[in-house]
Image (cartoon, rainbow over all chains, first blue to last red; front, side, top):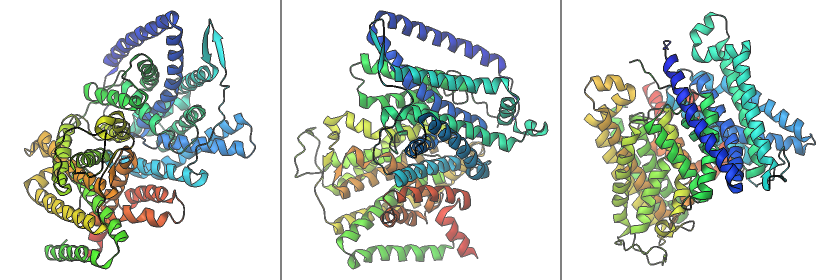
Length: 327
Length: 312
């Protein structure tokens, strides 16, 4: 791929999107000051948005590393959440179970890239999509096989009791979820921005040939990208499991929301994935609260409609760079 | 494959399928009727993905269109109180071409925006459609009967077998005729290189949309047959797994070949029945592993294997 100078327009696009997001934030803040219910819905929307954002970010990471849209991202997250549950059953403490499951997810992601994705490096998009669909079906089946399809409660990291701020009740779980999602994203951003390792990863993803020339082991970097994405997915699974309960298809809908978030933000933009996830979470919650026609069954179709509209009208999303194809 | 051998194999398959119901019981006839349904749907997906290179993870949605069409237009001795839409009631046989036509029209309409989406984005969009089908069907209970769906009259296994396989035969002949000439060449050119196809004068928009329409029409007929066999059309008749099952069948069959379609259809129908004896979830695992393994080892599927064996 030839280096394309898109630096200037990209910066301008980011600025315009930032203005848009800032306006949205001001609107939400003002609304929250005026109405307690609005504040509650915004916070719980941000919480689900944080979950969408972390899975969306995982999808974006993998897309940037290997140009694959990983349909198995949700399945992998679901599977590692079951691993965390199993570890707790085996007597591990809550937090050590979470940590271990995230590490296992990381190793699993690396392994998957090396064994399954690597051979498809130059295969057409249809092939890689089918393979990740195959992984999704496999993980769903395996989870049902090992742990049965029975719906199980999952002990989350945060207490469910509410705290009261100025007469409005907020759930500690929501606040904790927002904090964890934001922390994960910040750590990841700092890793990519400030460490040599992160730089090598970025180089391997955007300029594989040049990166190889300066001595970066590109293959391993891409595998580590998959590992990081899997770990991030595991975090989103652990955050969502206490809410939707542990079951093999618990991530199916979340995956669609994450896709919609990633596309809204621009499929190749990590910042966009986070902004898209939070926007989608809040938007769905506020629509559900204040628009009568938007019933609970329509949450998924609304996300779908958003996905389709963005794909058709502005495929590069809010923060992505438009695809330039050399023919 | 050599033409003469091809004709012999086709004739042998047709005879075998015609004789089969005479030898088997009603239950097995029903199983084979399902094979016929999958064959129609896989055939449709193969036109789109195998021949034109446009991926669809949402063919279950077109099947849902066909299934609900059949359910709404069938003369029905049962009472579906929520469904007083004043639609004409037809003999179930006539709902099949109608389902094909309506699903085909939906496919054409969907094909137009799909022109703007390539590769991965198309996969995303169709996947999202497949996931949302059940919730959309539940949202309009007045038209679709909501969660309960629409109940149809019961037919015998023999009748269903004959209707299904006759429809499948008609679709196979139509698709074969479509693919063997100018249109088929244009489809394959689009698949192999859009740039090269355009420079040879192939109108991308026309042929891609046409492929979507033809493919959706096949899926629509399959969906109508599925509703007739199951005896109802409800949101859970057309889950995401149905879309994925068709994709699995098409991959096993071999993308870009009509020969493997029956094998792919038989695979997705019978594999769960046998694998379920190991564990209820075993079919999914085998499906998934088969998908990955075939794409890695044998990307041309059963048809490719057959071709390789016959050439040796």
